[in-house]
Image (cartoon, rainbow, N blue to C red; front, side, top):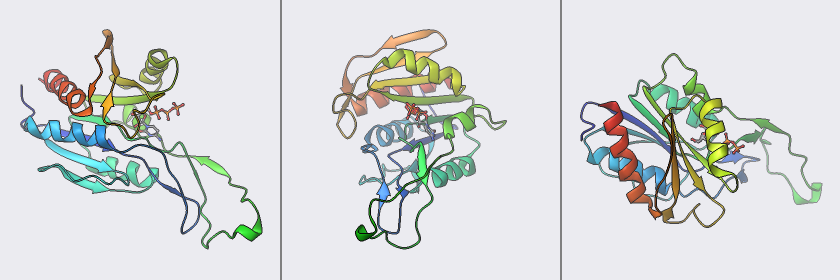
Length: 211
Ligand code: CTP
């Protein structure tokens, strides 16, 4: 089982969407699952590009890391990193951003009226791109109806596989994960494991699929 000669593109971590020069909208993603996947792909000999949002993690040896802050920057970095044989989009990308104020919002001016606008959906963009990687894998973070919603995302975003995880517990920011792998052949329930074990298992499947 090898990824020698293959380019694997991974996104990881949260994005930060600025509100003003000192404030951001963030989420609880630690980046651990995505970093573990990048590391596992290097272990199998792949060339790995890791587009990382703001996280406090060390770059796994051999991984080409591109640091970004916002969803827009992450989308640009992903498109610039193509072509890839497989893309595994693990990042918890913000779904909305606001037009940031250029100067610090002051408390005395009262609660700000934030106007949200949608961000680019990187997975959906890749899914319908003419530069689509041969294998496109998304993650689905859900707190209820996990598998049903993962299947809906697989179809809507034209992903080959969706790794669905139930984030109702302490998965986000935590060290273990329990996932379901949704492919065109059906749904596999994987046993709870460390994020490193989930990563190695997923990357072995990626290597097998790329042949
Ligand atoms: N994703 C992405 N770009 C976005 C939002 C999500 O690439 N702007 C990707 C994630 O990296 C993940 C998949 O889409 O691989 C599903 O992300 P998730 O947050 O679970 O789904 P959403 O599309 O944001 O839908 P919802 O918030 O309704 O669950």
